[in-house]
Length: 500
Image 1 (cartoon, rainbow, N blue to C red):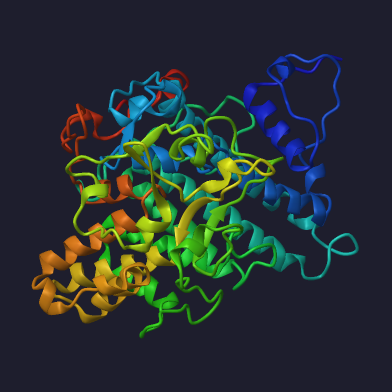
Image 2 (image 1 turned 90 degrees about the vertical axis):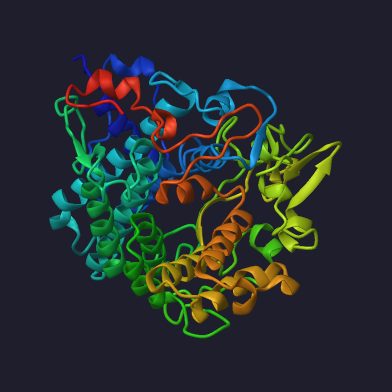
């Protein structure tokens, strides 16, 4: 007997095998000789196999070519905080200088492909959980497994929401550009194990956001208050709430940001999540990024080890650290407009003294120091969201919704700023206006989340100009380069897909 496998079928089968810890799949298996594969139903036969599949979903999402490194890096280097040093097309030169094309393999194609591969694996898992639900009974499964299964579905849907949100930030117009009426993404919600359903129209930006919020609501309603596996690297209820504050901020729905943030931010300083994981700011910003990056401030980050790394030229330290710890692909922009020379970032700010170092005439960031660790190189966690962001999301939403120098917003801003620069906290009198407070909040985000993949998200949600740097011009929102092109691979296989 000869078995023929389509690429999608092979991908799904390989994913199931990988989740169970078996050998990897190769392209020459597209037309294999007699071969025995685990049935897609076997992987739902025991609690242990299902748990391994859930771990596998995280592996798909945190791949180095997606949320394990490159997504964060590309979202930072589009702006004016970094200078490209190596002119390496593999490590984002075309992202940095806005010369991407539909065929740009190392960025446009890679992020899209990895994002949709993760989405499809999540969909395959969700479909399988539903199809095999009748098996989840004694004696193989404990009496509590119905709750566990719902928790797993919630984790999967949170990861799907994160994937779709991340892809929207690069391949679609901001929600605030027409309240979501512009073309968004193909909204794939069922697992594909063959090539029969490639053709799918783009849903609008608003429709994709609606699905994202639906997934996050399901996650909030069904995730446990704490995750016994890890409250940093696995999702729990407050993870869903925190991500909702980011999503609503991107949509300009400031009242909803306030509603969500108030669930996990106390009314008075020191700000702490009142229920679930007791998230709070760490006393020191340096502690947040020190090994093992497991503080109460980090709400979600993706882990790596020496045996499970992000992959060559995907590592955060490789890009941002100079030799010998990294390759120094990007240094900090020391010219006018870059954050390094902004007068609001004082020389005594702990985020400067802890994370900025100079080599010769250039400055680099060292939030990700593991490049120099020979035992576990490039094992820094890839950041997704921190409690500091939730506080600043809430502060900005309060200012924009009330159009006042909101006292609570000022306290939230100063909690983040004062942690690293106690003498630089703001007063209402010193700011003087709503515009000044808004500018202070946006500046604080640039400083606090430098190198964490937030900068482009902030520019896009405000439909703001992407600043120029060096010989690279600014990109106005009307410029076609403001968003990424749809990959040639998608256009070739999806007859209903339209170009950006």
